[in-house]
Image (cartoon, rainbow, N blue to C red; front, side, top):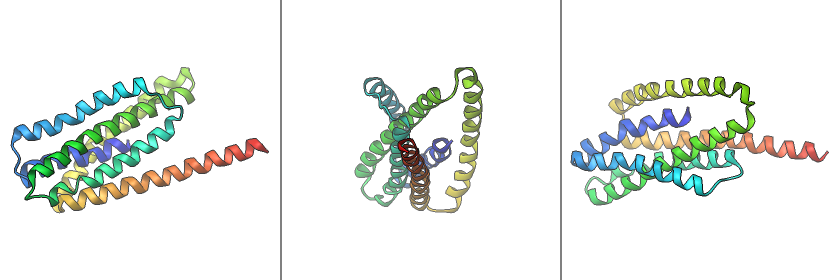
Length: 187
């Protein structure tokens, strides 16, 4: 849900930054947009090679990375006179976005498979998928309004900060719960 909502900042904001602000060609924008899919494919391959034992830790790291990437999306707008630098930065950021999305989603799915009993997994996945898909149009609507009213740089910086802060809050609860469980188990 988190990724789907905040990803709207990128899907709505990338064409604004690339086409309107940096005056890049449609072909360049298409290349930038496709880098997310290429990175997701490579990320899927990486995950088959390197499997983490702690899926929640991978989710949290991916979400922190995603928040940082979202924050950094505000920088190309500051590099208006240096479009080559802005393009290179956008290639790195769109690729990082794809990687963080596939790492977070795959790790979360694996974690859910481990903790949810087999007989109710279908229902759980249906609910999670429905709610996650709901956040796509909500994010698009929200970010469409924001991009009409505010600077792209401010929106990306603020969204990145909110994403990182939200992730840290959730991580603190996870770490606290993990520490408390290990302490109770020792008793």
